Length: 110
Length: 113
Image (cartoon, rainbow over all chains, first blue to last red; front, top):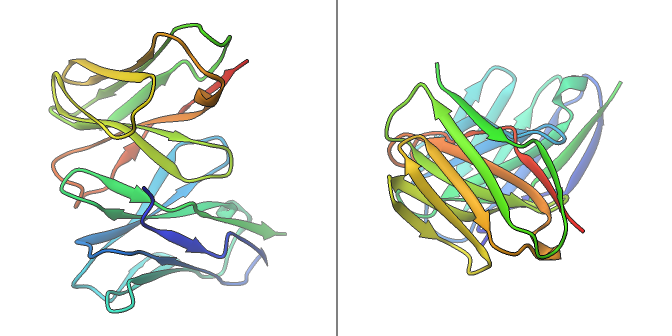
């Protein structure tokens, strides 16, 4: 079953703008991960944030985690056309399994 | 460096036909291996995972099966495909526990007609 749920389902922004998407989950976690998927391709790992971390940065990506609200957000700053993709959050269900959300589809307009 | 391969890239099969999808990983040993299915516009559904040769955990009861005949080879099979088996099949690997990232293959697009 899917534990994470992304919001919004779809997002359309102008190049140069920031894109923010959220992920909510139901049970306690050890870590939360974000992945990107270009159309028709496999997923690419973007960033992992542990349950004892509140914020993490990687290049133009900023991830926050609020374990009290069981939610996370992914911010992409200064978006580019190449950022057009679907973005998924994933939470660990046990030592070996991840549960993925349904994803947010981001379209960056030139 | 590590590489993951999946084949075929696309497949069109009639209902009732058998299926065999293969995934191999290079550049690592004793990986955890995963099969996911993704319906159009949806998230990933975990089908099977394996933490070692011959060790298969099934997540969803269905007409699919998985095998791991070698350390870095993971095979997804079916004896008789259903229309509902259509989808995008992704293989992934990781080392150790899921505190680390999973690395995905390019996927196989399966259409059952």
